[in-house]
Figure 1 (tube, rainbow, N blue to C red):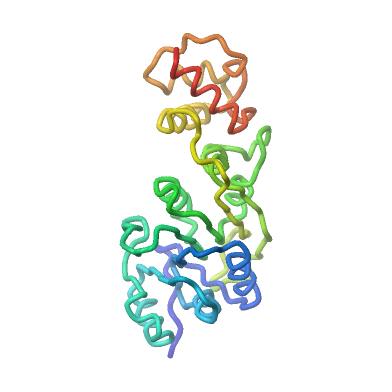
Figure 2: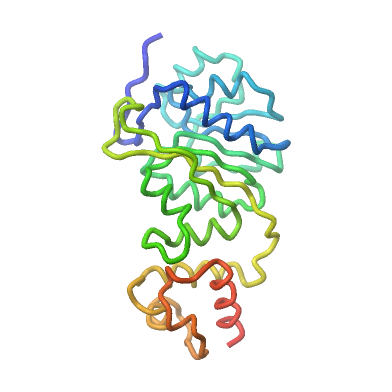
Amino acid sequence: MRSVRAKKGLGQHFLKDQEIASSIVAALQEKIGDQAVLEIGPGMGILTAPLLQLEWSSLHVIEIDKESIDYLKGQFPQLDEYLITGNFLKLDLSSLGNPNLAIIGNFPYNISSQILFKVLDNLPKVNLLVGMFQKEVAERLASDPGSKKYGILSVLLQAYFDIEYLFTVGADKFKPPPKVESAVIRLVRNDRESLGCDAQLFRRVVKGGFNHRRKTLRNSLKLTLSMPIEIDSHYLKMRAEQLSVDDFIALTNMLDKS
């Protein structure tokens, strides 16, 4: 069967190194419990093949590209109804039938942030994620407070997940090669059951703080929140990148009670 043509509009860069693919699957297997597994964007199935060799409570794959779907049906007939044709961003995760879900994939870089926001919108259903991202994005997600790479998704995801930067992948490991380096990271759900603050306000404060990251939080939040900033807190004299998750939680509670 002939190979699939990578489509620029879908952000497709097919991983071609089987050793790296096996390492990605092993990183998932190392931390998984009884979760179902969902692979996003299998392409030509380089992750799908080792995934099918292991025992999971269930395995689904979702692919939007018709050419890839036809290829996968020919290569992996055992997937059968577990091969979903569609857009992950529009998928109702409850339709997969398992309350606990682990996600894996060589994610299209043009929608990687949207995938992560969907994960956040589906807590606590998603407990584990292992995936390939643009290196710059991976570094941002795993960065600590005080770093210029630390940003909105760093805080929002670190509130709920322990994030590990696993390894870097060169552009030559893909077909066609992307113009940037890539990296694999792992997100494992932490033991935080509740933020201890208004979760929607927390997200607004984090986003508002980083929308004008060169300004102090008092000035940034004045511009982005439709509420008065009347509290007196040392956090408001700082920039967003200087606050940890716990600091943002504390600031959210102060604003909520003001």
